[in-house]
Image (cartoon, rainbow, N blue to C red; front, side, top):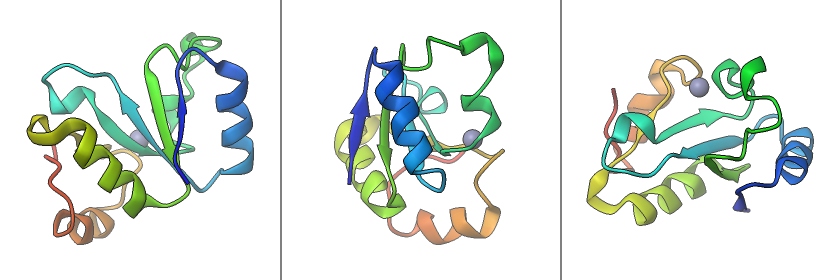
Length: 106
Ligand SMILES: [Zn+2]
């Protein structure tokens, strides 16, 4: 199931607690796919201390199902593209996903 959090820290933290194995699309917007990244819910780059209290300033589109999130990201980004985080996504996982989605990997 897709959940979208924007300016709602508490609900995002609640989702994360229930879906530690889920996925998060950090929807920065704009034309750069590199700024619009999909992460695992636990990725350290999503939990930096300095973002405390402001983690949903950038819209977070979340799902427990990666394929569902990729489909959603395809629709939202259309030909602008998005990327997958190299820190938290495994290489073999990315290779498999590359065939089913239109994201740009950096
Ligand atoms: Zn990540």
